[in-house]
Length: 298
Image 1 (spheres, rainbow, N blue to C red):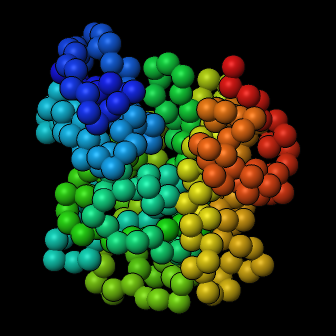
Image 2: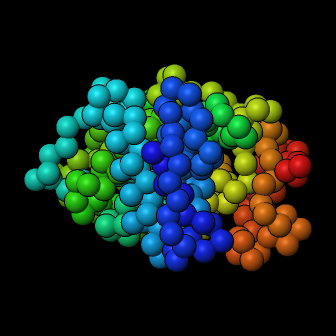
């Protein structure tokens, strides 16, 4: 089964029910079908964007778990290490999880994001989206000796948040990160006994931007907006002459001319994306060739 409220009045209309055959993929609820095949896209592009969004999104993910037998097969894998509930649980967000609103759709019970510099991991456009319909390439990371990237870090306040994020990041493995690979950029410290996690792109999900799976501006906007949120929190000089948002672009590899501007109103994007002007100026300054190759969504 899948649940989809009327988008025109998502919180007051009654919930509709439609049937889903996991084998036939015949459900007439396209957003829910996306959730089943690619939970990350489900949460990022969820229609539940109101104050009830976190509750509704968790409800939908719970239904997905029941539909496809989470404990038995489809989402079960060996790259979810055991969590010690007696230790602080921290996660490094380097893409959509850097934006507070996007993070809170999945995990509302977390501490505020803080800026960090992470060594040993390279951020890149390397995570292929759903094979069904219009799709995209997402940000991912891979372990690379000597690599550096800036990111956000926050603490889970309960283990339910970890389980919810594991479901959202179905195309990624949750990896443990040693404390000495994380430098706080706000002058603070991390608990020495913290378990620190990062979501690394699975080999079978690794692919780079292409015409079929392009970079999409709506996702870039979420990423860069999260970077801008942390701009003023940086007090150390670990990034050199770069601002935090400039480092977000510079410390991301595989930017590509396969890039679609899918903002709802691309000529007047500000109602949908208040930071559109700042984001565009930053991208144009940092990666002009790829930025100038962006084409409008048809």
